[in-house]
Length: 171
Image 1 (cartoon, rainbow, N blue to C red):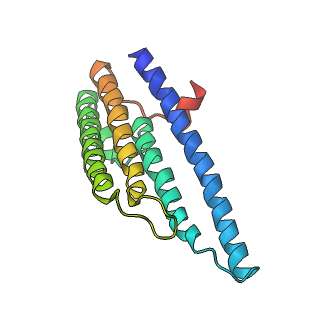
Image 2 (cartoon, helix red, strand yellow):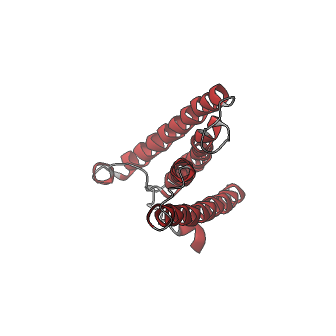
Image 3 (cartoon, helix red, strand yellow):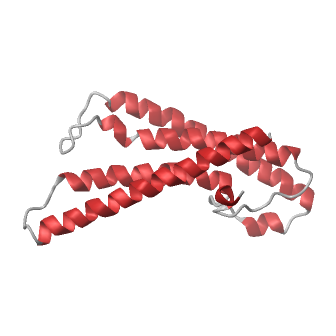
């Protein structure tokens, strides 16, 4: 279990690092858009579509990291009001549901990639499938992170812990 968690620590840190680089790229694109529109009076039209792809590339994998860090949507107040054993089983169920959601997202997003791969994004000249690749990757990462959480929930004798966002970097 430790080796699996350590590998996911690295994958999680890599995901956040790549998303950070994509965010810097997104900021640069928006800066160029504003400069082109207001200084050059020539709006670079490709940037808006590229920015959409960058946002997807940032949001989807980082949302998967949220499953690992347990900052995904969940109602903790209800769970924490229950006895410890119930908390454990509810956490296990939530993590299993997140894994199933991630699997469904990866599966059907991959179908979308396959369905639109032959079409080109007009302003960028790349396959339309790249629009859905971040959802496929995010879903696959959700499955991995949910498996880890389910294993931790199942093997732990205590109530589940709430991990901090920077836990992967501090361990």
